[in-house]
Length: 282
Length: 273
Image (cartoon, rainbow over all chains, first blue to last red; front, top):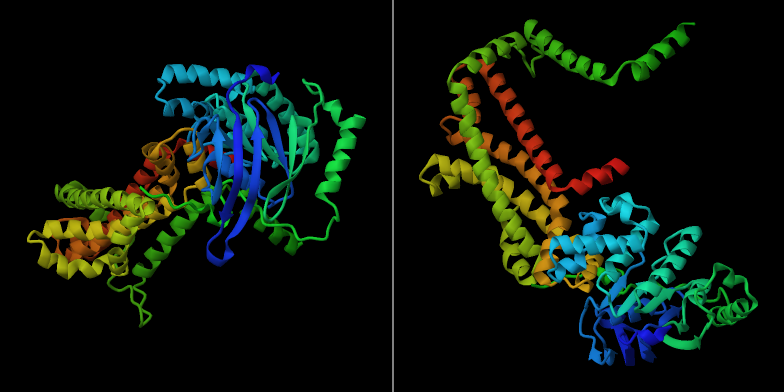
């Protein structure tokens, strides 16, 4: 299935990212070396605050690296780029733009004319089942619809890589299952490498070709699983014995002695939540 | 029996009576109290209504003014000054606010002097303004400008700084350059706060203008009000006051309407709440 995709290879080499200032600074991720193949669906699984969102922010180009390097198709990551689309946990649709204009935003930035970008945005909205809501403002949509619009807005750029930071984490269980199926469905049609962050074991094993488990402070990869279940995957997969066996091993890794440690502060792809007030210079 | 009657009449007052009726009744109540106070020439020692014109006298004066050509000159002079002063304040306040909110060098270069000037009420500028501007017209416009500038400026700075960093990051990930981020994200993101600044600025602009007109004006509704006092046309004082109130209300409504037209997405959000 991945054979038809040639772009979107990610090579991370000795990555270290420091967050915070002065005495409070700490290594959020350390010594990460890994390779992700074009068209691969990789899930990063780990407890809150373990640095998985930091790794994603570094991939997106929103964080500066303390050491190491990230290359996508041989090109070093130096800043944000539409080839590396980013989806946040809570949607970041522009409240002042209608859904259609939000989805067409990337094309507008490329200088595509109004008529063509509207046509392509409608097409993308049809893909995520939102075409009837093209004329709505984001605040008029439900949480699941907002995330679908956000995904459409990223996919319209045909990115080599789509980076997703717990995109369904704020949705109710029912909606989340529907969104997972729709994401896999969209992914078969707009092929791209996906790096998907979650702390939900079922979600990671159901979606991913590969699941990387991260441990906290400093964030590093502690285990790797390859749930090579056949695609297209059916929701009943989660009750199969192979799935449950894999889930049991993940659980042991993630909660070796449950309840003994304090939960860590949640990090975001833009750094620490307090530091997320960027001050941008001209 | 008595108690239940009382309770039910309260309930009628609360629920049964249309709210509009109560509001209109409250207005007439105030008018009646005014009428009573001036009609009976109430004098409590520390406050007296002996020289206060009655509603009837005020209505007659208003009618007389409405028919004289002077009214247009007074109102026109005030409106012109407010809109020039306010317009300059908006142009400069929004421009400086955007620069200060977005660029650290602008913040360091512009904010300290502005912070020193900010606590000085615009009205305190009047003597110096009279010295600085040979034309009294220009000095009044200047006072109005100073009054409106700070609310507009500070709200713009606050609006720009409060723009969600995630929206900026998303825009950049979608290929927006520096100018596109500014135009597509920062400006619309700061707009609600800017419009709030405009509404506050419009209020202070009127306040400052009326004061300036009372001191150094020729024509203008503030001048008219003060002149009515000096020539002892007491009914005209209240007419002037009412005119100022109506003009202030109208200008605020204009700003609100402009805000609604600029931010159609806000109406949708409010409708959901």
